Image (cartoon, rainbow, N blue to C red; front, side):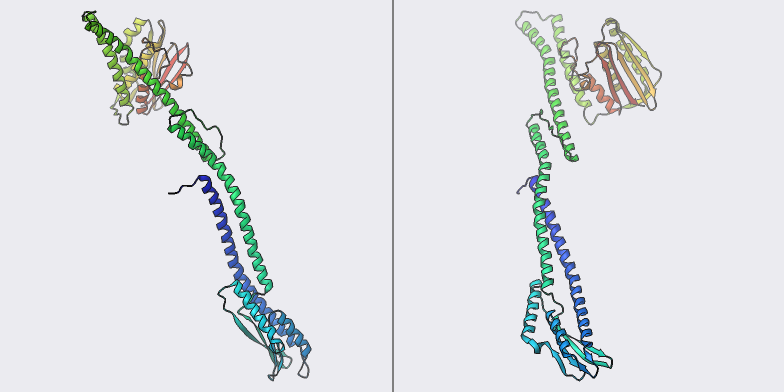
Length: 462
């Protein structure tokens, strides 16, 4: 199938619209003109005939005599207008006959009229027509006038010249309109197709894996501006996802490399007989295996939570009681690090998945414990407002840099790029927490300032 560019199609569309418009206007105008001009010619023919009859009637003199010279002049003038007159008195005597006066001129005139009408109407069928009008005088009917003409109507040279001039005007306007529409159409098509071509080029670059290209040229066309914005957003999103994927690969590789290297060195030392496979060394290998197992478990958990078929087992429970229970489980860890933990809040019943909400709180408390220095404090609060319940976890730890805040909930994103094992984690705890909160139709937000601490706020419907 042959394909055409948008520019070609738009240009042809402009030209086609103008061409069709001019043709329709010309056709409708000619049809209306033909109808009204025909009526005008017939009415004008009738009017001239009655005027001639009135003029001839006035040439009857007292004593039943006719002014033949005046009648001749009237008939000759009528002949110049395409009318063939014959004047007969009341006795049937011929007073004037144009065919007797100059039959050759009459025949030529009728032939010329037939030619004019045939040029306008190719299938025209006309003929010589005569109308009879009585001549009335003071003593009654004094004769009659027979007016012959080419019928049923005819166009003289002036009429035909007017129609042909009008059609030539339409042709000229049509030609000018076509040229103008082509120029304007090409200009408009270029202005519309150029940004689309840039979008196409950018999309092809994205398809090839180059996400850095952006469309900087603005467009005054709303749809094209929206398309450009969508492509730029797509490129930015894919670029961020590509960076995240690479970081994910590096993170996972790093997290697996350390325990695997430790296991490999310990196992090789025991196989070569350098180390005895005692309980302490086997326990060290077991710890590394458990670390790998936890990482794999976190990956499986994230995949399950991010799937579309996440099942929530909702029950009614007191979220304050749940958080107090979790804090009791963390008391030894906080005490060992010298961190004070406080809880404020009364009874708040919500309808949610108890186990998954518990996991969210555990993840937030684990982060607070990890990033709060000895001597610091962590505050947990629960409060109800309208139809929602808010859970806040606030610490006075190291804080999160502003450039990391927009990405804190992304998979495997870690504000700490040092990959120190002490800062731990594969960077998916907050991603899991956000996924669980989103599944409950809630929201989770973070506020942080470097050196002052971080506050996570969870909003859940009751």
